[in-house]
Length: 252
Image 1 (cartoon, rainbow, N blue to C red):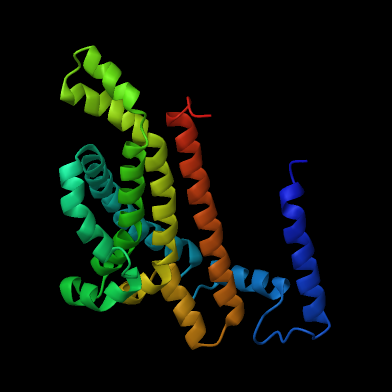
Image 2: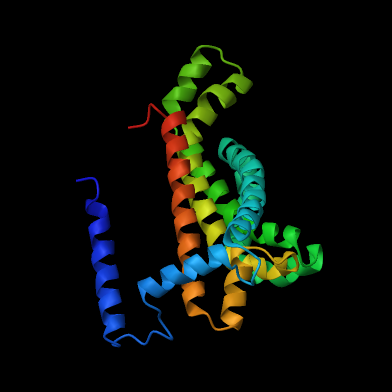
């Protein structure tokens, strides 16, 4: 059935609510689902801090993620395509990529503040780093996974290098590019809360909202904010899957 996938979640919520009502779970530390829902209502009506409503926090966070993610796509996809197409370039660039890639995006926060100051740019930069490397590596893998027979067929037909690049290499790598984009936006979205430590001057952002709720000890609103982050991340991933189905109709 269509709703089978949600049965486990529903059972978990019912058990959670029951244990909270029986005081088995200490609600000051882990509020019940009902209290989290009421906290979500407060975020929508009152705001956190008061007057800073949830929709505005969402818009600011989406804007920061969009800046970092689309920057990663615009740079990461061409770099990945060129690395995949050129063995020499791959040998030169790959050691640098493998050196920087293991550094967690959050470790860049201090240097991001020094470079860009506290604000939108530094937050977007942290998100960019989280998304960039999965996009590059998946793009390279996509190019290397293309069956060589397609290149041989194109060369047999006297296709120019430009035509091979745009009509064979890029279409063949698109499925992996979408995989990299989905992984990249997921990592970028996960770094959002910490990245917004660098963007608190605006007073808006889901990360800023959660930290403010922590300061005044509102665990219900903290968990409500986490729930919103999870739901938006789910919708973004679903949107990218829909785009992939649209642009890669031939993929089984």
